[in-house]
Length: 619
Image (cartoon, rainbow, N blue to C red; front, side, top):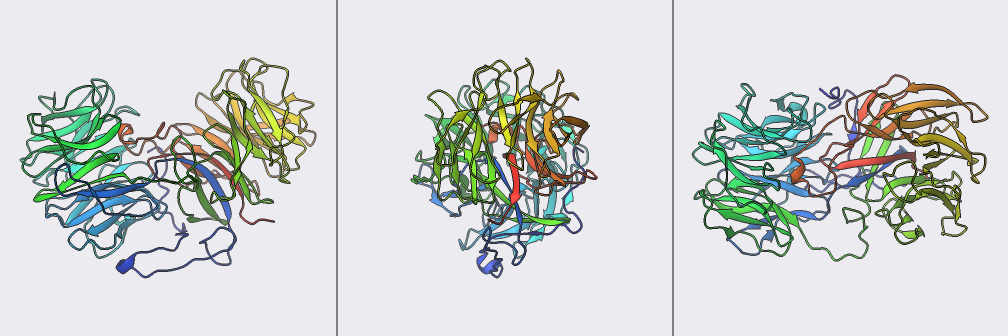
């Protein structure tokens, strides 16, 4: 598999850093700490702040009658999505990120009470599907390193740790969205095991044996659903360009379209009475629509007031449940490619072997933390550098580029008196007008440190003593790592290689620079020793894995490295993720520099990236 099993780990205690409300499901508890909110008492934590590209304001909605206004079932600041309903229509199981990780929750639709956590763990637990008898659940989890299909007894009166679930697929590829046949003997699912970033439909026995591939087409084929007689499978396919709903015989024969081409359609499910429902994009909105099994009689199931996805229904009658966006009129929303609250979710505390680390997911790109001021700097959709508290309060614009340009990747000076950032295009070639600017946190004293030449200078990072800045430059015709004085003088090259060297960062002791390079054929992280005078010394490779390892940052004591990695692969079908570039890098990972010990900090289907690591306390 792509990564060794990281979860569960002996001694890896993850304490949920929040006031958990489980209603009748469990008692409430508090964990307090003055530095970051709900944390472990008397245990000051360091924190990793990272960018999370994920949607906002998702809740579950119930549709009683076709075309009626859906009723909102959940109301939590975190994302709620991907519902599944038991055959008798009583139990609703869905994925929620209200604990900080995607876990499964259950709600009694007869009583409409509080949702209780059903399957928990420090990994993604998503895409639930009921066995026909309602006594068993199938779902996707990253418990063993990448997305696999698991099964567990359905027990709505208790919370079960995902460590007790049985892994049915155990494959290094990603396996997604299981669907159980009406007789309970087979499971259809999608998988990218035959080609990364594109999936096909597979079927296996309920115990995970006899896996058979049913589709083989370009793009994504995904989200299978069984007809009520078990003879037909429905799915979406991108083989014609935009995804549309297809159907095929249970053995993969007679594949044919059900919905018209040119109108994106996803997530089919069979309704009582034999109609097939799915989410479809109409006039810029995603709505729930249904058709007869021959493709006739299209009917709107939801209203058109907002976006709705992933319909689900019990086999014995309505209602239909889906997830959708509840309207929000909040001027405090952060304007990234996925607008929403600046702080994406409340803070869990992860226990590493030698310290506690608080995790903060924010919508700002390229966060930089300064413990002296207690402010984090980030860029707001590449349109300007903003500084704020980690929860998004006290936000103000510190640097605004000229019209048509972009400002990104800020870096604090250690004393908090200066910021530096890249100004110009992102993802540009060496001979592009990208420069490094330096300015005060209030926006004053702006100066271009690399003015005079067009050579793509970017990714600045202050040295721990504030006297120097390491950066990426294309001034020699190739992307290399350079060092200059903090006033822009005395630039000198640290690396010289035909590959791309980029994203540099200083160690806490001022004696090393870490950077990302593809000199080994893949983007990995390298360590370069520096002499006291700033001359390059020994170079060694830190990471070695399939997929990109990028955006490194040292821990405050220099013994760990945090970075973004795609080594865990995809965790869901790309067309189902309505945000920009799902998981080109993937998840946040930490590695101990001395022995290479790895821990994966995030498990979800979204892109998490550009982490920074700093002390929690404000000095």
